[in-house]
Structure formats: C-alpha cells, structure tokens
Length: 367
Image (cartoon, rainbow, N blue to C red; front, top):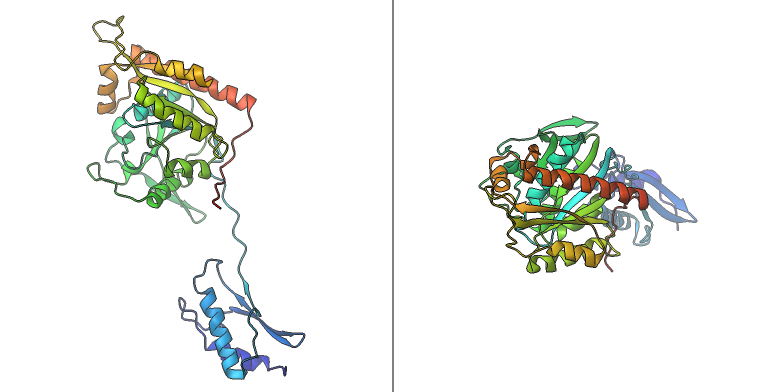
C-alpha cells in the first residue's frame, strides 16, 4: 500500500470533533500517533478517561474519514489504538477506624436502632472514640434519638475531595440520611440510590480516628447490607432480636448471610431486646411478654455468644423519644444493661481480633 503523507491524514482527522468538547481531535491532542507498520496505517487516539462514552463513535468516524478520503483499504479495522490514562490509586476507606461493627436485625420493630444508639453512647462513656452511621436509609431514626433533628452537617474540601463533617452529640460522631431530608418526608428511593447514599456516608464522612464505628443497618438482608460489606471490611456484626419465635426465625437468616462463605463477616453475638417487662414500681418483677430466653437458647444452639439482655422499661422508650439515650445514666437498670452490653461487645471484639484475621472487603461477582 502506498504510504499517505502524515500531514494529509491529520488534515482529514482534524475535521472530526469530539461531541462533548466540540474540539478537533488533532488540535486537542487526541491523535497521539499516525504511523505505518509493515506498510499498514495505524492511528493512536488518546482519551482523557476510560469511560468516555464517545470512544466507539470517534473510532468509527476516523475509519469513515480516512477511507473516504484515501480509499476503502487505507485504514484497516482494528488499526486504531485507544489509549486511556491509568486509573488513580483508590483512596483507602476508613483508614483510622479500628473496629467497624454492623448492628443488624432479622426483622423490623425489634429495637435495633435503640440498641445501636445506646451502645454507641455506652462505648463513648467508657472513654472510647465512637462514630455511628444511620444506614437505615428508609427509616432514619438516629437524629431523633440523639435530639439533633434539623441539624445539617458541614463540609470541607481537601485535595479535591469533599468531606462531610459528622454531627457530634454525647461524645458520638453521627451521620444519617435523616440529616439531609425533612423529618416528615418519605424516602422513596430505588436500591441504587440507597446504596449510593450509604457509600457517601461511609467514604466521605470525616470520621478521623475512631475505636468503633457502628453501622445501624436496615432490617432484613438486602442491597444496603451487600454494599456495606463491599465498601468496608466489617470487623463483626451484632444481631438484635426479641425472644419471640417469629423474630428468631429471621435472625437465623441474618446469621447465615453474614457467616456464609460469600460474605464471611464474624457474628460477634446476639442481643436479646425486650427480654422481659419490669414495672418501675416493681423493679424485682419480670414478665416475659415475648417469651423467655429465646435468644439465649438460639445462641447456645448456633454456638455464638449472647451479648446481653435488655428489658422493656418505659424509660428506654421515653429516652429515645426525647433524644437522651438511657445509657447516659448507668445508675438505673436500663443504663446498666447497656453498660454491660458495651463491655460484652468490647470483649467480643478483642477475642475476635486476637483469634481471627482482619476481615476483607467482599468481592461479589455474578456469572
């Protein structure tokens, strides 16, 4: 094949413009090479990013332009090389967080967020640095439980990265989708929007150094749970349930999901919430409204620890509604229950970290 002068080829290619920038592909520096190898014309195109949506259309335009000007065999299919920059190194997520603990439940209505809020406060009161992510994107309740409804996190920018600064209350750093919506508004999102919101709270939160980052998950097993284990290496999960049989049936599903081969996140143990009802005027009486020791029996059966039992007490409900977690005061039965729970979780984490390798982020692929 007779070689065509490079200048003539460039003149033809310059008529092609990138649809987004409207600039000619030669003058903008996209044409990185025009050369002959063993008598065959080769063209190199340099794109600014690997996901440029116009890569294929510009390649086809180059083929049409060159072959239209110099003959159908001038530029062979496959002789256009596309060059893209190497992807930037991925920023490590939560590099200064020692323990990432998920708080999960098999079903709704078992008091998971109440346990998460009070556990976070109890850990903070022990002197630990603690963060809490409200990942229940469809029903965020942490802002109310900490009396920070209506507050909005501020932001800062560093090296081109925008960081969300958590709200801090009772010694706990907090981020929730509830900070970005009105309390009365319903969150009507499809799965990808919910998981994207969780990723932002995790990876763009300005968490700093933490001993514990608790993640209050939605009930059940779903997209948000999978996103969490793909986004960060979760140290362990605490599962909350009532002793009721119908709740325990869903707990087993949650345990199997986290402990399964694909997810493989250690289950630190169970928390039995609403274990019994004790009237404040009769502190020694126990009424097993939802059944007796259901979580304890399940924990024994499945070989996992029972981390604590929390009674039904009017003060726990009132403290959640008023935004003053009952764990702020350890001089009552409820506060003491959460203090003991925080110690049990601390010990479970120490045991887990001493005996098991660090958890890896989950790589989930579909065939």
